[in-house]
Amino acid sequence: YSPKLDSAYCKPCWLFADRSAPAVRGVRDWRHLSSKIEYHETSKIHLDSCLVYEQWRLHGTINEDFKTQIQKEKNFWRQVLERLINVTLTLSICNLAFRGHREVLGHANSGNFLSIVELLAKYDPVLKQLVSVPSGSIWYLSHTIQDELIEILLKRIEGNIVEEIKAAPFFSVIMDTTQDISKTDQLSQVTNETDERNMATGVEINFQEICDQSASGLEKKIIGCIEQKGLDISKCRGQGYDENSHMSGVYSGVQTRISKKEPHAEYVHCAAHNLNLTLNDSVRGTPEVKHFYDVIERLYTFFGHSIKRWAMLSSSFPSNITLKRLCPTRWSSRYESLFALRFQYLHIMKALTKIFLLSKNSDERCEASALKKLMENLNFVFLVVLQSKILETVNAVSKLLQSKDTDLYKAAKLLRKATEDLGNYQKNWADKAVADSVSFT
Image 1 (cartoon, rainbow, N blue to C red):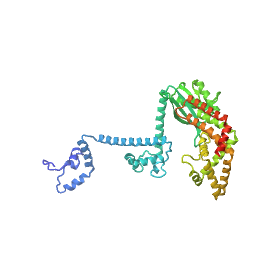
Image 2 (cartoon, rainbow, N blue to C red):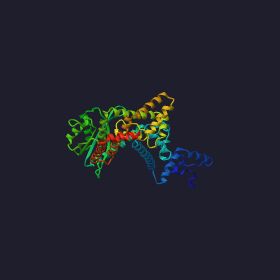
Image 3 (cartoon, rainbow, N blue to C red):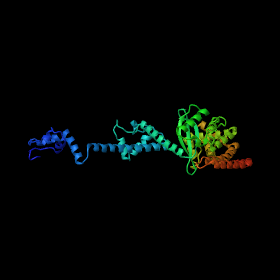
Image 4 (cartoon, rainbow, N blue to C red):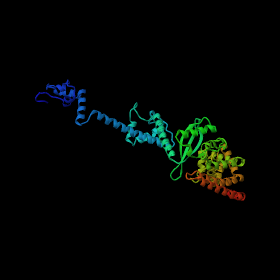
């Protein structure tokens, strides 16, 4: 109120509103003053003036307020992305599928990525605010964003790996191909570098589709990858491939072609793989051994495909010893299957006898009877004893050869020791194995 002008004014509007506004001119209608004030307080002119007045009172500007709000939004989305990157890394490290889209968030089929986000949202206010955003807004939870995060992390990790390799004095290359679920042949390239303790470490570089499986085609892929990453082929000191002729061939194999470009890149076949191939070749031409392992596989299938039969067998087994399926590729790992068979032979025979006598299923009785007769055969028992001894020695060496701290010297020493052990057993294997078989039964 101005005593001099005898009028009432709105201070924010007097200072910052358009000069033609009624509140600037003043109000002298005292009878209707309350209604005029109530009407004015809801007007746009008054609200805009109050906003500017408040900024002026706090010695700020509208731009600064907007900047604060924008910075607040930036910080929120940075925190969101930080959490989503950690979820992505967790799933990748655990080798779990992502699956799922934001449209199904909150449902049972939302996938691993979104399920973890939902779980964290129960305890994390940032993700809780994110999942509560109404439909049609930004979420950063779509499969497109997931793929982009994976790609960004891949490039970052790959870049760090390449820098480490460039800084290392030497590196070696390990390469193999395998078919994925779409029957596409994929090339995996692994580069090993040496750290300050001269310990070798292996890092997977990438996967590439292979259309040309010839030695020259694979050589071009390897050299192309090395050049693409800016690596120096002259620092390559090792190559590791499988035993296929187009890979390990001494005349036109990949290892020979790479050696022509860098003579110091020595080819080394994986000692554990070589051992497995030797064992595989040694038993492949023996029909009795093949039939023996077929019986073991039938035995596992018979008990493993029935919950009732498996429970009957497991009730008499120690908790840490069970029948195991045969590994089709790693022969040395079959020792675990033989271990369960050898030390639980009587329990398996009792279970087969019980099924044969009490089962009301004719097919089940016939299979139990057939397996029981095969296991009662002295030849079968003899092979259990003989193969257990062989695979016990080989499996121990195979596991040691696959340890991270094994080098070529240790590998040669372990293989030599295994050869000596099996050689000593061979000298009196007939009497020893037969005696063990008789006492076994």
